[in-house]
Length: 478
Image (cartoon, rainbow, N blue to C red; front, side, top):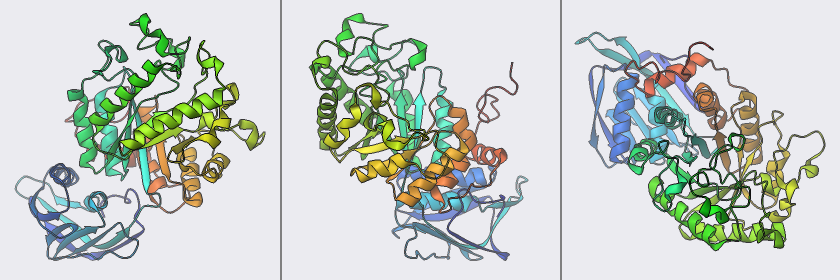
């Protein structure tokens, strides 16, 4: 193995450095079970982890989900998502499905050791090895926000890292930065992107076998700007659309049928952009001004909320997807003790009472950025209510480790790693996060900044561009 360790570490890894598979500047593989874009990704990763000095060509085969070089074969044991066998006669990766095959190839390329990189003298080896592996958490998503200040190449880098480090889903949330056909006012002039500009990011994610989950916050955060910034993507452009929102503009008006129609159009456009999938993230966090307009305030708040959510759930499920909702409006802080830090917003209108009225096809996303003690009581509470639940840490390394441990111990549906306005911090901690959500251990992984940088420069070719390299724009604080 060339690197200090594998990212993330497999369940079982046995290496025999006394023998190896040798190869040079050109390698031919038989690949079965992958789409064309995924095969191109495999060839790209082979080249990058061979220091741009070895090219992999691919021939199609019909052998389940596999990659074969030479005459080696691999065996899937019970519980494996993929296995790898390397011997002097060849290399084989065999997997349960296409995504698992790509995950196995991500492990394989980390085993490549360069011997000679001079032009015309290229030489590499992979030590004989046997790998058996499977994730501890099946659903492993990362949530990326596209703000007006966001550079698309930073989203691109982040998707590369997520895919290579074996995440299963990418959630894209546009903050006034996607140009909708249904309403031009939903995007900022001069600070938004067309479908043609975003589509390469979708294709990139899918080349790693990841599903792209569309997201639109269809309750609070209706400004599509951060609350402290004072902007409103729609009303700073067209005040005649005010009735779509509660009076302060922060929350969508749930009593207006025009709101319902526009939100449906938004979902349709985003689903078309992101392609086929099983989920749609509806947001629903921090909706503090809920039920304040002249129509909404006549209703019992939690009944109005539950009615609206169930209506959206039915519509989303009709398209073959399941809705994901942030959890905070559906719990009551006082139910969890004085000493606990519980992310919630329900104390404004007693919206926590809505939880018992909600459709159980909803997936609850339990974001708790303060928990670092290996037990988050809200996850068990929500699961006991009958909801599939994903836990959602942010960028604190101990918070990520702790909530990942909770997901494993409780058997939660999965995990969503959030990034918000700290996108560079995601790139910095990506290898750590991947270790926490893939590996069975609940202990803190021992990783360094240089580990993440090593992976990043291999999966993303900056061609020497300073701004695109690494994860921070500046070397010094000014």
